[in-house]
Length: 543
Image (spheres, rainbow, N blue to C red):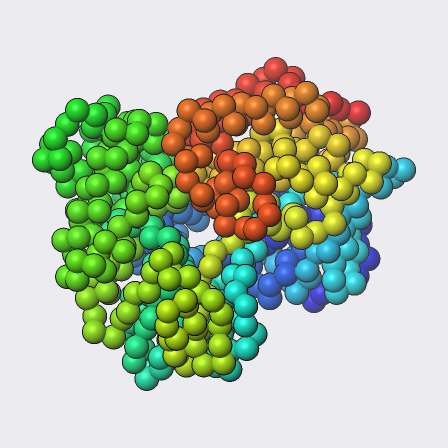
């Protein structure tokens, strides 16, 4: 039953993805009332919206799951090494039902504004549908990849056939049998969808602007005997993930201490020596491939050797040498754009019904009524698929009217790039928290690990305030500035800023070019957050 349209609670939470679900669970434990506002019709966040063919997690399913409940982790059975979207959505729904969370979630509510009322020291959050929630605290659990980015191409509305956006896929699915399909975009969504669409379509034309590095997933059904042995060590694995000693992206040995040795550097090695080290990682599959050398993301020499190894794998897989070269990335160091994990992506270009068009050399001029026109050719198709990514990390907050003290607009404060303290709190916005916000490891980590750490920190802060009689907390401007400088300093020591990636906001016209995640890793970041608390919440003001 939907709650009343005017609600007063301790905490208002925006978003019912994994962050919102866990936050609601923790607040209930603390005896605090909460209202979750969710735009979708069910829980799941990104896994509710992204239903495109082939949608799958790029972290191992046994790691991409909640650790807060030993009962839950032993009870839930994953079927594959890398879980599919339907299975992850089913997991989110199971969590919501198992812990009876839905009764505090208002679905179909798109938040338009969050306004701080200084007189009453509370947040007023309003939705497009007319719901208003007043709360002492406001927590944005809106996700890092939740606002789809449409391409700015003339004539997009002129296309007469169906147009599907990867991140707003119809729940009932799409049958491409016998259809001529055009797809724009070869990021993670495109790389996952293209092989699946090609299996159905009469012909698939892929429009690629920038090729991306991708490594094989080597996905397979999980052997339940192996899973049983792994689960025996689950608590140890969770500890490794939380301390940053294990990424959770593809290094799940049964014994947590059994890790593939990491070489310090590839600099000075021959291609054959590099291949000898990288081959086991490639054959094992997954994004953990980038961890073979300790300095891949800092040393241009190592990075170049690893990148050329992958390019040689592409050349060995794709039969047409000209197509293979188009698929070989050359304008950014490997890993500086989120590396993709695929199942049969490069092999798809050996199919007779697949054409690759490099629009970097032959730019798109317009969408037409029955296809797409580049500078040299017109391509006809019946269906158009847009896999053009997201306005990452700041997109959701940028589309709301968020105002803190003295009516200060968050959009104005972030006009030159996002500013926050620890990716958790923003100066001038009291009792306002962000989960996995800019300035935290977030998208460079296993998101479930980062979500749990952020939620635990936020709830512990609220408990500290209640125990101490405080009503208000906000980040100090000086602490925020120091943290922003530190985030930039860490990023500048890596190769990340050399790519025009969505980490930098480079995929969104007019967005400031600022490296948004914290690149030092989840272990060091957790240490900083714990030190801040141990030092009396250093950098925060309480009232």
